[in-house]
Amino acid sequence: MHLDVQDLRNFYYRSTLGRAAQAAIRGRLVEFWPEAKGQTVAGFGFAVPLLRPYLADARRVVGLMPGPQGVMPWPAGLPNVSVLTEETAWPIETGHVDKLVVMHGLETSERPSQLLEECWRVLGPGGRAIFVVPNRAGLWSRTDRTPFGYGHPYSATQLDKQLRAHHFVPEKHCSALYMPPSFRRFWLRSGSLIEKAGQRIPTVMAGGVLMVEASKLVRPPSGTVVKDREKRPIKALDGLLKPA
Image: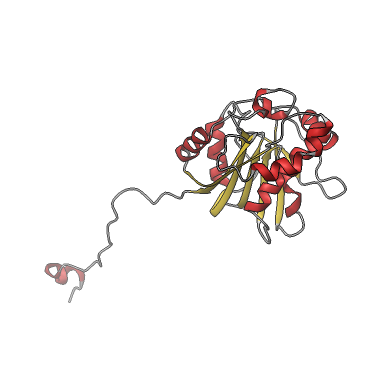
């Protein structure tokens, strides 16, 4: 079940822990995608906190928010780019998205297979998607004090398997939110240092969220290819085709 948009907004924009989480995850996203000049960038679920770096140079930025969650205008102080949508029927033409970010969308969906099919549909050739999900082994999935404590958490193997089953190719992996999900001032002040230290750990087990970049696998057409042959008239019928 999707979380309420008001709860998500209050966490990411009105709490110190939420702003720290936003900065940590967005920092890892920008490492994957430093820019999106001239491209179409879309976010599904509640991914808008991660999309701000692309507003200036992207051809188009769209924030897709599922109906059960609700929608809020975004970004503040600029023309709205967020829209309420059906979870598995987005108002985007097939193959028109270059970069897609899914956060608080996959793990809370009651129809994850259909959702991944819709993600695959809207991506264009060479399109990339980043899926941000709670880490099953992390601390953030074990408490309901943050949005990452709801829905279905994943291990890296589980997420890879599900993506491959829906014609995505996992390309890169990382994790974020190494700091504890605590509102205590000490942990909040140390958050940036803990994140930097956590990035040096050669495993995704410690982070609160998993981030997987995947490319769209375009399947070749099935069946047997038959070469067309040049049609030639039968000489035995020359007299009928060309009467004297």
